[in-house]
Image (cartoon, rainbow, N blue to C red):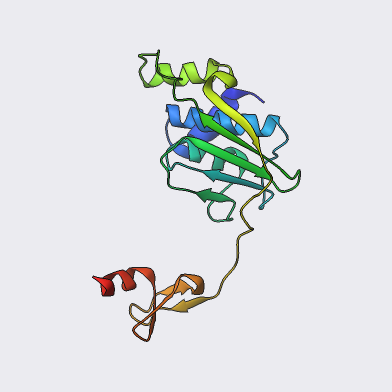
Length: 175
């Protein structure tokens, strides 16, 4: 798998070249080269612990998206990526090493180049994880919030003061 083609695909999706996109490209490249195939539906699941630029590369290359329910965001602010293959029944976790950029006083372009030219084992801690993917996305009924009248997934409604309300309306009432 040609790294420059992957960078091109991810950059077109994301909008610009940056170290975050390069990190995501490396994760996606590793996944593809290790039997985690592109996901037209929910065959592949990415659990990401960041909401930075790297996630766009996973969406563009692996086909993991919020809309399909096979991109799960855990808001920990860490460059950690766990990929599950439902087809192969396996999982892997890649964590950006905390020492990778320590010795480099590089600018943005130099960091991208450094990432793309490095051995993957120098960039990430890689570990096989137990096969335990999140469940497949559930299609749920939408019902109208009794306060704002907006359609809301039934599982996200809160019963409060004899009203079924969405989370934002509930938060306003709780103040």
